[in-house]
Length: 201
Image (tube, rainbow, N blue to C red; front, side, top):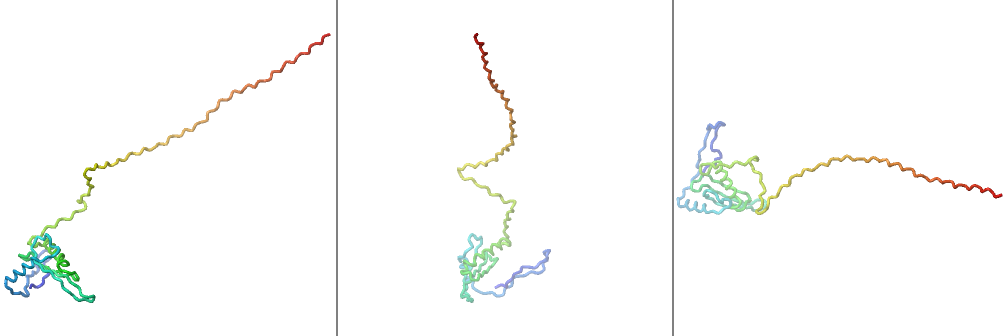
């Protein structure tokens, strides 16, 4: 059993070493190698969630601890593992209060821890390169993909709207009416008066 250690080394801002730390063994259990072989073989066969496509061999153990609280009895999810199983670099222990089964409630969290360590430090000694996040300027604008067999829809062009010019309104002028020719009023011709016939003597 190793002494818990959270700091690997202390350096100045420029990187000069101030002090370093070495692993300290607190307790060691002596067991025959055949015992360890059986235990490690069984830990490699443990079924757990969240470790699909994991590139390293995992030795793990799931568990569920019961705890009595004021509201009754609860089940805590427990999961321990170390990776790689052939040459251990990192050991992780996860406890989730009221998490239920360890293989479901705690194992996926351990996977995230292993992945983060592998990205920044490396479980095989070499940290993985993290893909840069796309910037807004480099993100392509999605375009609509036309369906197979469909004709591209023509974009209607804007038709210039003719502006109607105001036509000057011609105000008709009154045409003087030709003066009516005065109608000759017939004058009465006086009837000739008969001269008195001289009386016969």
